[in-house]
Image 1 (cartoon, rainbow, N blue to C red):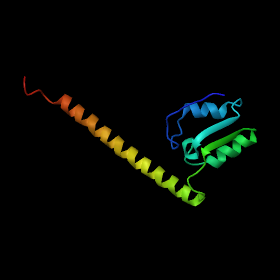
Image 2: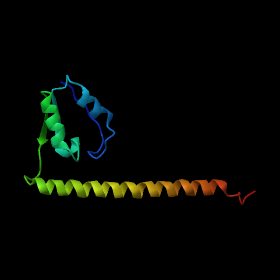
Image 3: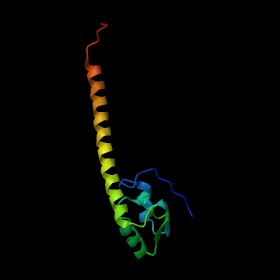
Length: 111
């Protein structure tokens, strides 16, 4: 038994440690805290594919509700919010870089 920790959102598809676990046939059980920590969308597909290989996924806290539609709604809203937040962050970073470039290009008043 091994513990693998990867700090990444369920929305992120670029998760090297998760990819390694999913492709390693020696890993029989994936234990996750919450389903959405594994993936925000497609959890059932991952479970089905692993079951076909004789493997499984177990969630310690499967869901806060038993309402699949409610969980889907929360997942969609979370996804949209993360995308908007990411866009705002990238715009802010671009503005900061632009400000640094402009500052660097200004002739010095002291000279």
